[in-house]
Length: 182
Image (cartoon, rainbow, N blue to C red; front, top):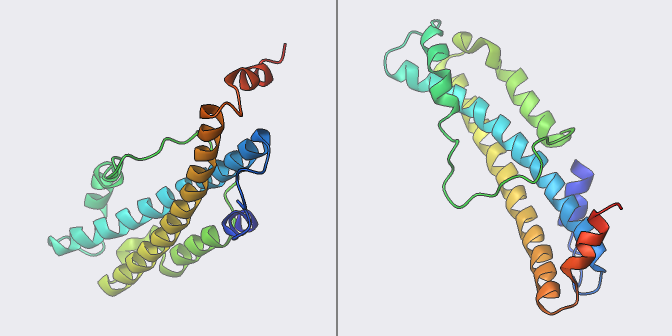
């Protein structure tokens, strides 16, 4: 995924969007959407882990014992559903399956989890939990920034497609003929 992100976000990726064919614009847009879907999935993984860590910190601040995670486990459905409705209009994924998500960001998430031990939260002190939460928050911010940059590319490509249909340079019939294998 790293190479795709770097290529898509490189200055010359879009170039002059009025030059490529409509089919080429669709290919570029679909590639951007595919990578954005992967980043969206990764972002939710990071957020879920962050929510668990901050849920444990909150539980302890309310007087919960360090080694007793039963209350945290009971609260997991509420903790993990907290960010289901994000602010803003949001964007629906074009596919439900992100595919193979790999790369430095995934490796960084694994390193954060491995370093601190998410599976053994009860053994971590508050400072270690806070450090993990801070690292996860920074990673989530980086993933979100990359997603926003991808949305800028997707929006530019979609705007060009819209312009072409509006100006008669592309026709809906052409798309429908390609979609119908008969």
